Image 1 (cartoon, helix red, strand yellow):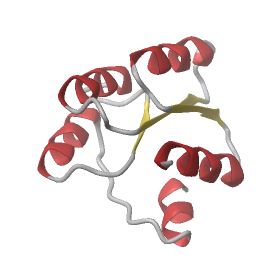
Image 2: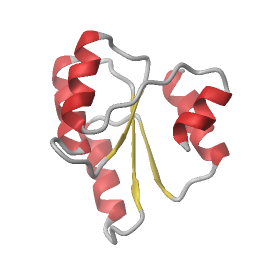
Image 3: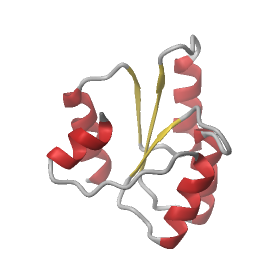
Length: 106
């Protein structure tokens, strides 16, 4: 859904299947914005945010989480404390996603 919405708005999008793949991809070609789920295999979103902030302090990051996790707010606040520019709780609307992307890129 995120890929489809952002590509439809003219953004270039690349995907990583887990946090480890994401950090390796960012090392090779830094992106203007990283959107990460907080719950992923290999390296979770909090670890990814922490590592990106350590290596690339100016990285722009949006953290997303929700669904089956009852403590979503706690994880999103932790992501913000670690340096996420914006956070989104699932489910979120297309308009909320695009507003967060525009805000993070400004």
